[in-house]
Length: 114
Image (cartoon, rainbow, N blue to C red):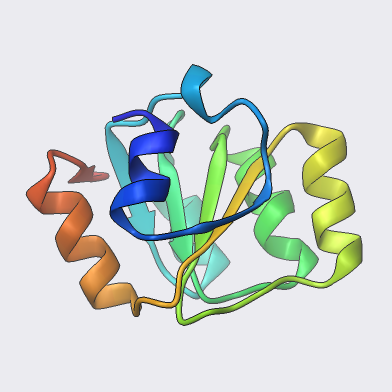
């Protein structure tokens, strides 16, 4: 699924990322614990989290994840946005909760990492 479709599906605000049409994911990893994200690495997966500190972007870099969706209306600090912009990590924010976000993604073909 292309990130622009995810943006529309989850009614996201784009915080970083002008290249949504160029990126596609087929898997998502959802957690507020970055250790759990790293425990189930899946390159090119979408990270779904409420954790907005700079560690979320660093975790995405280590795990080769091109994008993060922040749930519950969470918004990262400017330093986090700046790092994402420097490293070409797409940042999206939705007012939906994690459960609803993951349910919608799953119903549209996005699977969880195994």
